[in-house]
Image (cartoon, rainbow, N blue to C red; front, side):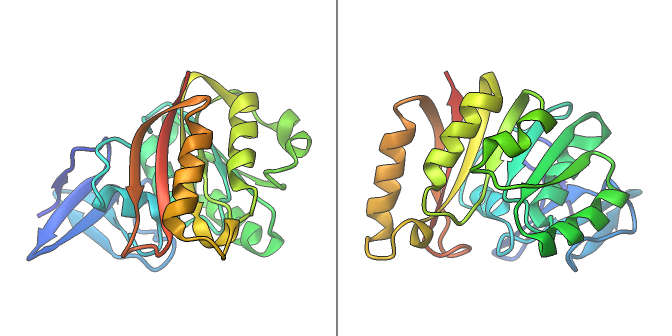
Length: 224
């Protein structure tokens, strides 16, 4: 049986020792990346695969609040083909909106097809590190979510927060340790990232994502 989780607009079921996550499908009968569709009590849900989404992995690792609500405007940096973006789209509903930024034309093509079905997503082909490329196309936002595999990912995150995130807004960072420095232990990199974030942000949640995502961690922060 699917029931509401402790997180807004995220649902769960328990099958033996395995917990499964779901979001309420904004576009009934349509899946995005081959995920299961489940219908209960006249509501259709999409299963949320934690091996393909770091946000889902953070929930299964114990995050109790992902700080995304209906009506929010979200800047999503590193949208790829839209796996996690689509679940955020479900959570926001038609009242919210996502600016989905990625620099790879191939995945942007897939994302554009997704946007035909989901009117609360705007695809933007741009480099998150080159703020001037996107500055005129993005408004102030309630939430920034970043998942990019660049060496300078922490500074890119902070630059975008300074420019686009409203005061008191939330910023979510998925850190891929091997993209920053393959010679250092992931735990050391996670500590360095934390120290940098704490200079300007309040960290409200931190999770390491093994075994769902190897050598990744996840920060949820609030702008002071």
